[in-house]
Image (cartoon, rainbow, N blue to C red; front, side):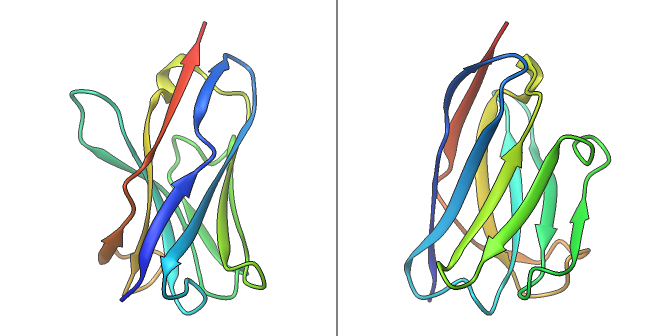
Amino acid sequence: QVQLVESGGGLVQAGDSLRLSCAASEGSLRDYIIGWFRQAPGKGREFLGAINWGGFRTNYADSVKDRFTISRNNAEDTVYLQMNNLKPEDTAKYFCATNRGTITTMTYEHWGQGTQVTVST
């Protein structure tokens, strides 16, 4: 069974960029579709995007597709979420998860503990 660990969160200012990483503390991400989500206080979990196992196909939520990019380096067994032009409303805990379906299905099963991103004005 794979266990995921997110990292790279922190406190940034509006307009800054940040790159989050998703790695496996047990098992490997290489054979999985990986999705990114976030959850702000008092709100539900929001899908941001997903990337297929080869890294050549992605799917993004309309709300972030112009600012966020998902990529992966299978040699390093890591998936990234590049976030540009961050806004205070991007403040949330960010999670990665494995998907047993496709990049467009919400069949996520293994989740990391999340990494906090806080964007100040």
